Image (cartoon, rainbow, N blue to C red; front, side):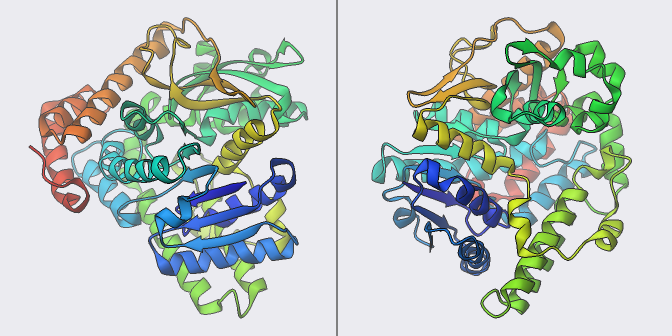
Length: 461
């Protein structure tokens, strides 16, 4: 079995490879091909991935390719995680939004639209190439904004495409950790959209356990739910996707981000530049131990400061610097799997036939009442040797439903705008978004994004 990672020159690709190697024997994995358009980064992070593979004495072949067709040819599964425009594009997205007094975040609000107008054409091109050279392959998209990209691919007729996001399964993982059981033993009920989903129940041995845990302050404090007031969680009686913070604390989130010296995009850009410079100076072929230590220390620092403005206990970048330990290569087995775990769990289930319950982004197909069958939603699914099926969710509470419907309307308009390159539809999309709402903000936002990203957007009417 061949697994291809599009975006293999990304900083997270060695973690993806490490996770895949741990599962290789049961899934029948023989080759992991890393593809990227950046030769320097592909060499650096492909080298880190190869060194991890060598150290665990895995028989899996690690290959790299700058040629997309070669990378996709013969692939059984493909994971896409790319960032057209790079970190600088993300920084521009965030700063433009903030300059208009609107949330600057890479997937939520106008920043998500700006990223989508770059991401959707690129991923559509990869999907078309994959359909030509490996028509039976599955494509798992992690490229943000994952919901918009998945909707665009679905609308374009790509059937073997699934949007993946680790956030969809955060409740399932938190329950498993709290009760000290395998994630496979927890069956959650997830509904909503990407970065806008809720979990209403979690079952272990047929018994619902989430509702009781929502009343446990210690459980909430140990999980991503700590960013919300417990009273809000208990009012909804739902596990809240952490990105709902930007809606439920809209003015606070905006104020905190505006008050920061750097946006998250600027933080990540600087982190990544420093890492690439450090690894280039070390050279994994010259000093593998030092390269691996630098790499895992980077990961520790990046994780420690994620959404730090929403977490009072989170360290500043400076504090994270002081806290970094020299992490050796043995840490490869201790890192979190993130999106890699989602993709690999699906692959395991499809390959082995052993049933897996997981939250994914795909066509609704009647799973959630009130949404169209062809709306891409984030919903609980069952995966096994027969494929991927949504679980019946039925009716959902009025409060979440209203927000979900508003954002789905924005997503539909945004996808149509990008497909037809229509400025007017793009403006209507942002007006429909609850974090924008007005033409006086939407029109200059759209114009500035189209001008800034003209290289990717092309000519719009």
